[in-house]
Length: 349
View (tube, rainbow, N blue to C red):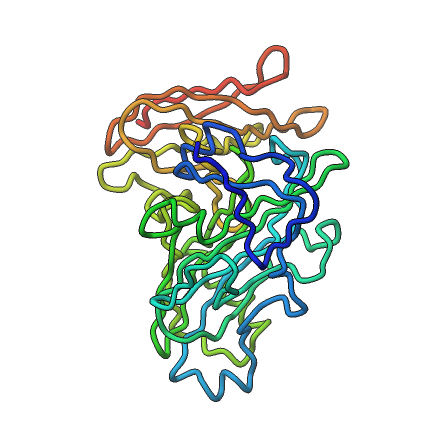
């Protein structure tokens, strides 16, 4: 784990003492490339009076749409309970810098800012909120993020600034690119909690994107959404590639496919593969299918049972060896003691 120097940017004013120097956890290292996050007792000053910088308006769009670009994204500001090792966690803010004008200092404000405004985490909508940003053409790199965490009566913030993200390598955590006249959908931003709280870019699958775009159109009726580009925020550390998405009907080239059971008595959902972050299907739900690389894996499963006494959910674990080009039917049964889901997989006939 990288040493944490507790570099608190100017947009994060540290109040009181540092609660802990480093977020400890091998699983977090595995998918965050040894990202060291510091837990401080402050919130980001990015939380300004305006919740979103450069949000599109009808007048600005009419003047600038030919020379600027529109970025479509969604963000979840609601409180997530049980985000271990904390009792809860909430995404507070995230920002992006425009390349090549990348500030060296953690103190500089980002070119694009999204945050929860003055909304308390307890009262924030428990749903993704949609945003349309009118921006200058170019490449935008992740500048940082702030996650509020709670543990009983203690509250702190996990803060990652530019200096922390730079330790991830040249891509600094990820980026997206837009050109003049384009409207681009880049994904949905929230938290992953399976291995400790971390920023995570989900996305709406292509076949469900028209429904999502209808939400944008309702909120921003002046936008022309006839030719929206599906171009996700590219990242190795804070999101899954599209070709590893759920919702598939056949294995991608060189991959296998897990297909969870869906019946009147049980639905089997794929949570994660090899302790990687949660494989969300769309914005806020688990899926029944997932692409999986050849080889030996450990898959975490959630089973939703319908019984005579009502509905209940239990977790399970599936060890599996995958061959490319094959689909595996994954079934689940409630264990004899009722405490877990007994998971099995067999090659699809």
